[in-house]
Structures are given as structure tokens and as C-alpha cells.
Length: 461
Image (cartoon, rainbow, N blue to C red; front, side, top):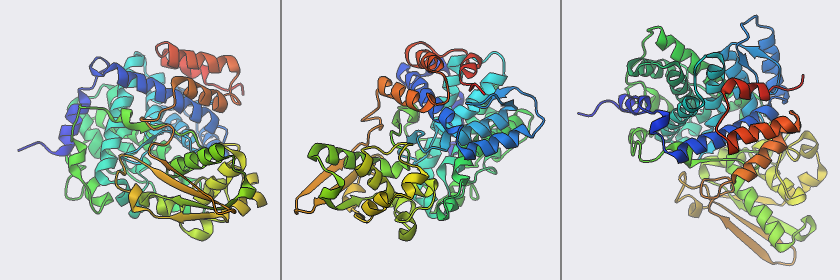
């Protein structure tokens, strides 16, 4: 009889070491670290992140770990909470397709806080711990199935991400396999993350990876002291899979372990909005550019949306066609389509309150029709395809099918393109020379000592 799925997964993850990982995997860990630093540094300037920073400053705690983009230092758990919140606040952090989960925002927040405050952790061990966390969270997210989690009102990034956070922390703390299993069991009582933020454009989604990171560290610390947790926390009768999904697929927890690594199946976001909007925006930008289209030429924009994202970016209709906040806009397909048509971009400069209130944007949103299409469902969640048809006033139609949105592993941003994203996001916060040194450390050289890299990411304030 095979051991429980939870035990099998922990056994595999515990054996992950820098020397056992393929060079390609370690390269991707550096690549996503640069992406994480870009979104965390820029995200640290959001008011939602500043609320967390002000809360932390009120706490009299040892100053051991850095809050990126600021001069604040605090306990590792609080630093991970702040950095996880900041890195998720601008909706440009990485996404694992199969699990519909943001991984780097949690795992790097954990690893950075621990590695900076714990002497002797090498850069290679740092990256390997992140890879293990990616693997755990992505596999659990695939096993509960994203569509099933959303149907129950849970956000996979926190609900599943907290397990990856505990694994990353356990690796860096050097826990035994038995205590790593205990940390996983403890984490099952910390899984949360409500999707209700969508109802009114609240900020709570932004704290989900921060809470996952903080709780994962705490779970691993408890396990290190001998605290126990259920050994079958994933597949047990009252375990995570059955509590968070109506139709779990537990086999996905262990299927093909070691054949590949889930960090290789993770995508970068070029646009500042929900992952379900990325492919359609790519298609719109291509159609407008290829056919020389301008807003007055366009009579109708028909966009086919994946079923799993329908209730996230298409419904309720009144809200999606009348966003009132930046969060509303980040999860409104009509808004994303409108700014793409009008500005030829869908970045931070487009997802603003000014654009939310723009009559021009509202006009174009009225031309958008959202449809379901069984044809794009066949390969989901392995692929996240999109189809867009633009009809001109003269009756001409232009259609574009995007199989792999820009940033997907099959259509990636090059290191050079990722460096440009870093400059664009971190540039307004850090001096240009610091930005270039960080790029040098991660894209060209081996990663610096983590503490040194953190010093580079501090703002001037």
C-alpha cells in the first residue's frame, strides 16, 4: 500500500537540494526572483501596502528583516507579510497556469525574510527552497482544481500558497522530514483567502500572499519546536482537498514527481490585471496594431473568456461594465479591453482611477461583448487561450486566437524583456544604479548574498 499523498509529497520535497536541481530550474528561480523584486518594490508604494507598513511600524519588534522599497526592518513574519502584500498589489506577479495560483509573491517573501535574518543560508539554498515551495503549492492547487476553489469562494494563492510557504520555510530552517510533515499538517489549519473582495473592490486579495507567507513561517517554527499536525492533512477525510473542493483530484499531488518542476510551468504577467485578462488583451493589442485600428473604426469587440474566469472578470455585469475602483478595473475584462484599444497598453499607467472615470474608456467598454466558447476550454488549465473578434463599422471583421499569452513558458519574456519590466517598475522607487546592480546580480551573475541584495532594494526614505 502506497504511503499517503501528503507523506509522498513531503518525502520528495525534503530531498530537494541545490545540487539535485537541473540548471534550468535554478535559472528560472533567479528569473522569477527578479520579477518578484520588480512587483514588490513598486507595490510597496501602493496605499494598501503602506497600511501594512504603518501597522508594522507601530509594533516594537526586533529589526531583523527588510520591508522592500522602504527603510523598515522587522521580524521575519511581519516582513514576509508586508512584502507578500506589496508584491501582489499591482496585479503583475507570476501565475502558475495549472493551479491558477500566484506563487512567487508568497515563496520569495518567505525565503527573503528568513534568509536575511538567519546566518549561513546560501543563495543556492535560498533558490532551492523557493523551488520546493512552488512545487508544493502548485501541485496542491492543481489537485483541488482552481475552478472548484473559486466556486467555493476561496483564493488559491492564499489557500494553497500557505502550504508552499511552510515548505520553503521548513527547507531554510533545516527541518527533518518528520517535522516538515508536521509543518504541513499545522498549515492545514491556516488555509484561508476569501474571494469576496470582488464584490466591492476591496483590498483583501492583496494581503492573501502576505498572510500565507507569515502563516507558513509560523507553521514551520511551531514544527521546529515539536508541535504536531495531522499527517494526512491533504487527503484525509476532513483534510484540505475535501474541505476546499467538491471534485478534488488527489493523484495530481504526486503525479510525475521529479519528471519536471512546476516553476517551469509558471508565467510572467506583462499587463497589470487579472491573469484571465492577459490573453484577451494580447489579442486586442495585436489586432489593433496589425490592422491599424482606432477607436472610431470599431463597432464591436467580442471576447471569449475561459469559464474558470467568468465570475472573476465578467460577472456581475453591472460592476464589470461600471468599475468604481482600481481593484474593480483590475478584474474587469471590459475595462482591460477598453484601455488596450485606447492606449495600446494595459499597464499601471492605464489601471488608474483617472481611467476608471474616463468617459472615453466608458464608451469603448460599451462596445465589448463577453461570450463563453467551448473551443477554448479543451486545453485549460494546461493552456489559457483567448479569442477576440473586432467588428468594424463597415462590416469588416478581424479575429485573433492566442494560444499562449505573452509571458507563458511557451511564449516567455526574455531575460532582456524581464529586465525592462524591472526597470519600469522599480525605477520610480530606486535609483537607476541600484536597479542595474540588481539586474546584474540576478540576470548575469549568480545571486548575491541575500542580505546584500536586500540592502540594494531599500528606498531612499
